[in-house]
Image (spheres, rainbow, N blue to C red):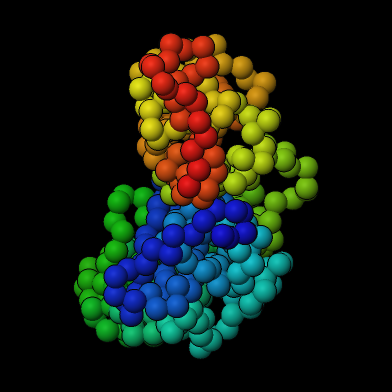
Length: 387
């Protein structure tokens, strides 16, 4: 079990020596986050997490059975707030940022040529200032890929007109520390707004409209000094937030009604163990058919039956005074029902993780037989099913 009470399935790539790599997009800001995991040890790092996507990212880490050892930012972002502090609070992982950024709550201040290890793998840290004074790029140990932040974007680069940006410095950073990598090295930027998700060093040397294809340092500086771009609209909130490593100001946050685990699909879920110990304060809603509810798979004592096809017409009859935990055999139909409840304003609703199958596998009792008051076939009786 992990820190928030969710069982970890320990799902990893079939080849345990293989790198596990995931690219995650925040559509609102065009921000790209990267999860890299060592298939042998299960240790992982997260690069450039987004505050609002914390639940999604944490669910993926949990579902893949990874242990997060470090959350890294490539720079102090101006268009979104990092999720590093939230990840640290959830997992105890390090918060890593360039030492010269002087960020609060940073547990690992990084300098050029440092290494960030996760299991048997590591990222080489390269100082690549120019977009900002504290930009870093992270190059995988075998130089097969690099996370370039805003230093090098696909067919472009980050602006240089705030946070001590310097076009001459940016030119040097790209030419010396990124274009010097093997041509086959995959480049993963921190942002893209048009759906371009990956490039290579060879491509950018040839086709980057600012830094490649025969462009000179003089051309580049002249271009960057005349962009005249408006400041990012979230800059006033993002810069101070990122200097705090994403830690929210103040502590007046509403307490959650339950230790919700969100799946990578975004579904709120609760474990059987928690439901067992809190069932007196919950409404347990079973959305199977009547035949299943009274059949050999059994049902949870005190649960209310509303078959899934009938639920849309009966949601209004459900009380909003008690939280609702939704149940089916495996958690599939109940997931759909949970989404319907949330869409109709029942905000304290969650799916029973793993359904009745997991409930029974964990040894919790089930009632088998017709509901009290129903006409029993000859010889039929209610009984408790245990495993």
